[in-house]
Length: 108
Image 1: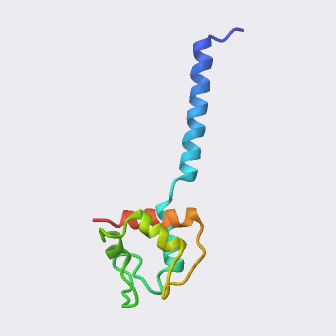
Image 2: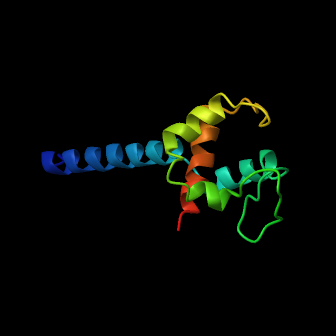
Image 3: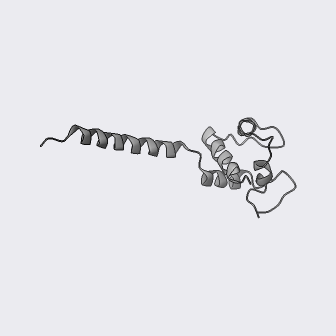
């Protein structure tokens, strides 16, 4: 049985496209993961979620998200190399990107 060449090309393209889409999703920063990391590491000083427990120790995530001076690059730099009083959590690049994605989701 012979399979038409266009059908083979189409099938190969669909498989390749599906694989690339899956890889992109696996690499993309995850808002849910960022929220979970923020709850775990940041909530003792920051109000991580709108309506959450307020603290005077540090600015809320909502205010950080809406601070025009806090660019993604500055945030990444700060999380890679924090200065006291913020502790160094030794976050991975992926974790930092996830927290960044969560902060981005809080912008109004």
